[in-house]
Length: 404
Image (cartoon, rainbow, N blue to C red):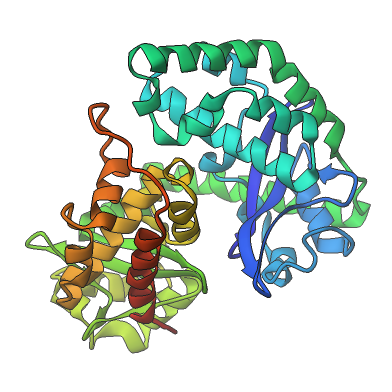
């Protein structure tokens, strides 16, 4: 997808619908969030081909002024297809909430509720906001299982289930009324459907080829595992970039040298650089498998795919820390800390390690959020000092990124 515009799937009464979402971004000193739609409706489509036809031909909607919109009409149908991690089964929430309150259930609920709240905030759905504010547990889901242990935690969970049983139909009705599927240009739709058919045909041929393939024609996922080097994605306030990292003798090594990491705005740019200027002259050449990557890049046979656990979003955490610990996504925070410490270790910089030690206020707060312990007392806001320190660490890391 285009940087900062995401294809998502919403499961509602009419079935699985696809649309576009622009997560929070800052522009002219203000924070924004938006969905594909207009003042009255959120536009969503039963088929990705319809979405593709729409974005390629229509120029009047709420995302048209987004900084990254110019890239979207050029995307393929495959690139407009939502990832599994961007599918939100809103109509299935009552069934999900009836399951055991384990880590998976709570995490899944947290993602769905967060998306529903975003839609309600952007589209001014007062009824939905009222439902989500009627039970405090809705805002605690991002903390994982910690808020729901013990007698008080059980009471919160029961209240959440009761609220969903009584009021979730109101949420569904409001979203059903909001969603609209506009007509699309027939010619553009025909081209998109042809593209879908070609992709399906190519996938079928590729599957057949895999059955008969020689070991050298392995899947790209298996290739990256075999060479022991991971593509990673880093999102900062300046945008989203890609690079590579591995571990040699358990020590992190990045694509770069002298504390500067070579990063790229797209998979294509990264592959092209590896096959040309990036074949040598950086720390990853120390990996014994580096030449295997260079060879694939040189013949155009290298595909870059980033695992979810290697995707690091540094945006929004500073604001969430400053506002309240309940606003912080512990998974996002834990991954961000991993990246900060890995980069610092590779660059020989002790500052992040010192700042994130539990003896320091920021480190103690991070530990509380990422390593829940029901016996701990919750820290008390404000966390302006911790947010400022976090800002410094992120800015120092961002300064190490050399965009190609």
